[in-house]
Amino acid sequence: MNPWKELRKIDHEVYLLKHVSSLLGWDQETYMPVRGIEERAEQISLLETLIHEKIVSHATREILEKAKEQSNEEQFEIEIKGEGHVVPFTPIQRAAFLREWDRRVERACKIPSSLVSRMAYATSVGQAKWAEAKKEASFELFKPYLQEIVILTRELAGALGFKETPYDPLVDEYEPGMTCAVLSPLFEQLQNDLVPLFREIVSTSRVDDRCLHLPFPKEAQEEFGRRILQAMGFPFERARLDVSVHPFTGTLGKDDVRITTRYNPTYFPTAIFGIIHEAGHGLYDLGFGDEIRGTILAEGVSLGIHESQSRFWENYIGRHRSFWTYWYPILQKEYLKDLSLVPFDTFPMSINRVQPSLIRVEADEVSYPLHIILRYNLERALVEDSLSLSDLPAAWNDGMEDLLGIRPSHDGEGVLQDIHWSMGSFGYFPTYALGTLYAAQFYFSLLKDYPQVLLEVEQGKYGTIVQWLREKVHTHGKVFTAEELCRQITGSPIDPGYFLRYVREKYLYRFS
Image 1 (cartoon, rainbow, N blue to C red):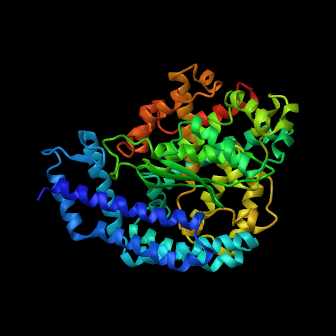
Image 2 (cartoon, rainbow, N blue to C red):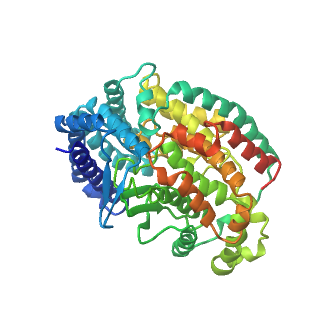
Image 3 (cartoon, one colour):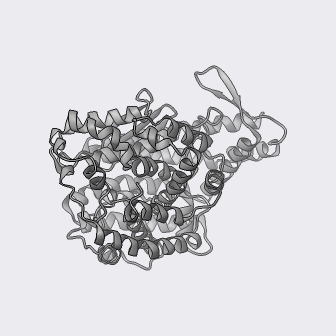
């Protein structure tokens, strides 16, 4: 028996099963009939259990150990299905492959299959109940289902084990190696600097954004969004755009990535920036190198790095005045003729207006990390059982008032606005803020490597940016850790100073 070939076979089977599960999840969020939820929950639960059992099986663990013993003796090759050639792993990729499988097996062996099944079922039902509760703006409708998910989450943390806090193994799932000992001081520094900076910007900002609230039919918004996607190099033969309540990106295969957005007929930035944001995720998932395609390494190294790609495109490129130097005349002439009366300089200021916002996904780039810090504090308290679900809505409202100076009027614009807790994704939220910080560092590194790149953006050309991101980030997948990747690209570990510099230059000094 060749353990490398056997491990590759198992790896590919898990890879395919995970994409089948993703397909079911994507369908649930887009086209599935409402009454299909019960059986869909059973389907997803069964698939996740099968995946888990394959990973923790004695055969898999035995093959993995034998492959590790021979890791320096044999070259591990993978066949690129349908492309007729075999691509060998480099020694670094081979080591990363074993590292990731070691991590996968170690974590999975700690989690009972029954817990995997119960969590999959509870979250499938929970997502549907969350959607109902959000529509009714009633946390009480969702509370019993969230209670079950929180209980299972604590059970999960206990099974995984921890030294300091049960939140650590949860955030580690999404941002490998990250702990509260690192996150808390990082977020504390960010909050201490950002809150007064945000308030200063708001107090000095006088922006009239009425031009963003013009009637803009959904069909026309979609057409405009697709034109931007094409210019970004988004390959529609390998990807598609759909609609969902909560925009997301689903990877269903190495050549099948689905992004979604939502449309507001009287506020088009919701859809357009949602499209640009999700395209950043999609381009990452479509950009893995040939050597690692179809393997465990063909994933984002962490969700923080993944989020850096979406926020890089949405904010650092999509909200830059250079971007709209090209697209604004097209928007005026072909889609919103009423904009012909609005000078160009007004538009970039409108889409970059900084103001307190109740809704995270509609928040400006300055206040956005504060939304994440709130969620981090609350979900950590829930997991640690220092905050009860009965007190959660009030704690949310108080936190919004403390950080942003505004208070939700109902649960729909407060504690129910995000889908994540219904999915059991505790530990996920911090990666959004980490992505914002990574994106700032990458942005300044891009400008250092290509000082004239924004002149290309003014012409609607993004080839340099796409190629730079592909070479620096996408092609590596999970070969390097997030910290290693950040150091390779920027020369330093994650540092809030880059983001704070970007905010000061853009909003106080008006450099861009």
